[in-house]
Length: 314
Image 1 (cartoon, rainbow, N blue to C red):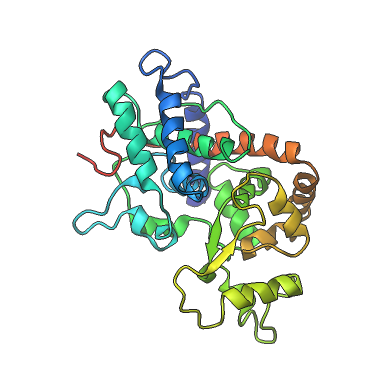
Image 2 (cartoon, helix red, strand yellow):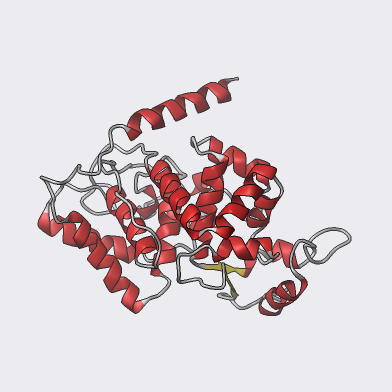
C-alpha cells in the first residue's frame, strides 16, 4: 500500500513540475543557449558518428534515476560510486559533448543554465541532426547533488519482459504508448554482446537460441558474439540504419530481427504490439508519438541547483 501511495505522490509531483517548465525559460537570461548547444553537438558529430545515440541514451538514463537532474554526469568521489560507474552506465560515452556545451554556455551566461537543461537540449539535437523530428524543449530543470551507482539497478534492463517494462515506466508516470515510442530510440546505436547474449546462447533448458529471432539473423549475431566472446567491443547495431533516426527499428522488430529481449517483449502484449505495427507503417506516427513521450519523460525532474561544472558538486 505504501508503495502505491509513494508512486501516486511521485506522479503528482511530476505532473505539477511539468507546469513549472517553460520553452522560453531562458529567452531573456540566455538567448543564445540553444544555438550554442546545437553547435557543440554538431562539432562532436563530425568527429564521431556515435555521438547522437550516446546523448539520447545518456538523457534517458539520467531521467529514469531521480528525474532529469544531470546526476548521470557527476564523477565518483571518495567512497561514493556515481551513476556513471553503475553497471548499466559503464558503456555511456560522449560526456565531453555536454562539458563543451556547458563551457560555451557559461562563457555567455554564467551561472544561469543547468546541466540538466543542456543535456535535454543535446538529446533533442541528437535526434534532429540524425534526420529525426525536432521539438521545443521545456526548460527550467535544476541539477541534483546525489548520484549513486547502486540506483542504476532501477533502469529498465535489456532482459526485461513486458510486465517489468510496464512497471518501470508506470512508476515514472509513463504509459504503454510512451514505452513503445521511447523504445524507438533504439533506432540509433549499438549493443554489446553482453546485452543480448541471453537470446543467442543457452536461451532455455531445451533451446540454445530464442525462437522468436529470425534464424539467419540469429546466426549472424552468434557469429559476432560467440558463446565465450573475448572481444571487448563486439556487438551489433540496434537497427540496420543505426545513425539515422527512422522507424526501421519497428519494421525489423516485426521481422524477428530485434536485438534485446525487451524489444521482443513489445510484441507479447496486444496494446504494445498494435503500437509497434502502427509505428512500423508510419514514420510520421512514430515521430509524433516519440516527441510527445520524450517531452513527458524529460519533464520528470528533481534537482535543486545550477552546477557550474557538470561533473562536480561544489
